[in-house]
Length: 577
Ligand code: ADP
Image 1 (spheres, helix red, strand yellow):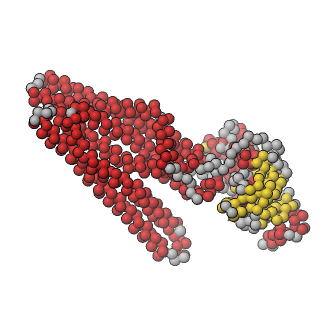
Image 2: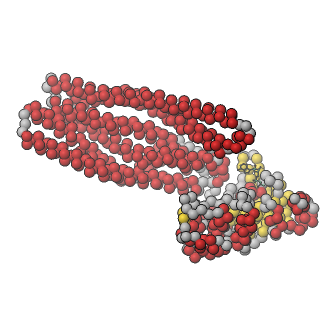
Image 3: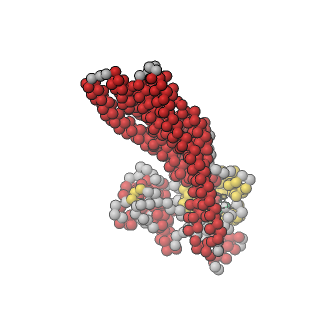
């Protein structure tokens, strides 16, 4: 399964909404650019007037005053362009920032099950590649297209007003231009997409080969890897050649049109002027307008191409918003802190249940250890009990309310899942902690760190709580990062914790130190500990043995050992290891 991609209509609706929401700045930009373009029209017009005046006989004074007006127009155009550019750039930045924020908001509230099913690769590609492509188009493309359209329109209108008869010759290149551009645009997007896919593939292969060099050597895969690199290279070469072919048709044709149009105006206008239908001045002006319009036309073609590519990225970015939420919050106040699972079922893939109807009731303050062979469904059960995924059958309720009925931030105040993943976010240490409770004051932060035995090293940091951490900032050890995560839990203050130590990567010494921190967090809470190692199980109030998606035994450690069932066997074998 992949994340959805918005269709043309949805993407257009989204773009239209963006434009509607920014009507004011857009109007301002259009007005400023229109004024600048009008000032830019003055030069050729003055030159035309001068040509006519000189051929009719004129005074030095007239020539001087016309030149002064022209200089004034150039000055005005410069100033106008400066402000117009500034506001278009600001506009681009603003729209892009909004897009990005909206996207991040969507991404962070995506249902986890959807993200997992779609794989994080797709999401990462959309957050990086697609956003980058959009960034370029939104920041530079949209403003440039506005400028180009305004300039082209005004210049053509001015020429038609001066002399429609002469101006028609401007359009001589339009049919070939339209044909070649349409030909190009239809092929460009797939060709460039193929090109970037080819490079992505090549990069991937090379990076993998370099990172896995020893394995490749050990398994004698060198020849096969070289073959893959060669195949990727030739695909990249072919993709590059294909886009090059497109350009070798587009560029000369467009350039030819740009030479053709002024020549046509010159010849046709020259003939008209010789026969005294128009003045030579008018022809001069229109020839110059024809030259002037080629720049913006080029720019338009260039950006049409880029914007077409950006539109595919936009469709992928907007598509993320189309993911259906996996839950809907219903206002309900849980009564009490008891967690109860009833006939709980879950399937990652439809028809393949991983949990087959689990019944489990946890008393507040109880500690339950969950043990069982790997693949039995322990982690899945843990995620269900923490409300990460909505169950596909049965329910998990806290104080009588289904977990999935609670709004996410409220849910986290009741049950939280603790894994040994410890991501440190870029920002200050205080920012990292406030993710759990944005209103916590420094005192509360300090207390949370004290609770996990971390205050001493935080205090010793150069800026204490205000120290920048995360990539580029002060480096935290994995154990410290884990403590920060635990301090967040203290701030969050849920009454029930589900601990999944599945991903334990810490060395035993750090783990022992962390156990103290962890105990600080566990005190007074209901705890479900998924024990992939048995020694944690024996301290629990009850032990549940999960096997094949069912609870096969449940009870206090001593009782289960005495009963001589699966758990007893596991326990004995573990002790003799
Ligand atoms: P345990 O924690 O006991 O090792 P898990 O809950 O991780 O077991 O896995 C239970 C079963 O669910 C396994 O068969 C596993 O392959 C499957 N499973 C776990 N996670 C996923 C997933 N994200 N997508 C599909 N199947 C999964």
